[in-house]
Image 1 (spheres, rainbow, N blue to C red):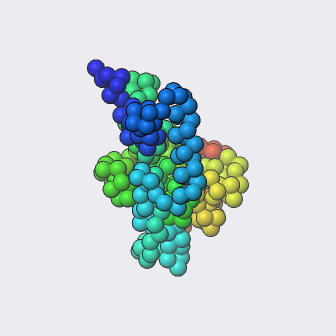
Image 2: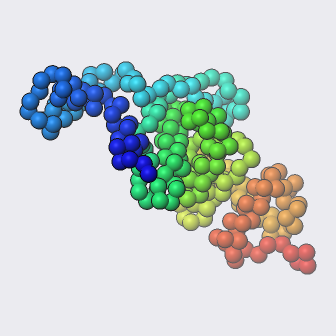
Length: 262
């Protein structure tokens, strides 16, 4: 059984600058006014350092080369034409705490939640600084395979009903159409295109295009068989099928084409 002294949270806390300074106050500097006062002094010192030297990276941060949010002349070029360097915090105290969470540990979800939380945070930190991370980036940062990272992010998006600003989503790359479906799902629920673009980290143009594609499919499926829609709409069969699922779920009154229709 794991000792309470060997939990990741306690082991990580011992490595913090705060703990190192506190140890020196109490054991090396001859400070005699007690732990609480020493902690207050150390906290104040660290706050001052952070304020004065905010432009310098502490050991728990890294600069990472990321693809710009607006990449290439179209803004979504598959080719990487330039890079931006984003500042990422490798791990937070709150994330380490997840590894010791009793409920998550009992459900054997602690490591999964820990990884999902930091993946989402890394992607958001990069996006806020004008960059987007790929599955490869997250794989190299975490040591997990790109497939594992993809599955964890996919599960998170499904559980939270949201979209993580990873490059495949922001630049509309890859085989997945999940993020397109989420745009349309929100639109059918009454959310404005502007709010959808903001919430899902998409450009307004992309959101408008996804909605327009859906509207085209919606019109065609009432007059033509499903197999003909990709050719007529110039959209992939997987996208068309996703549209049909959304029609059936949110607009059941729409009558789909049947062979016997005249």
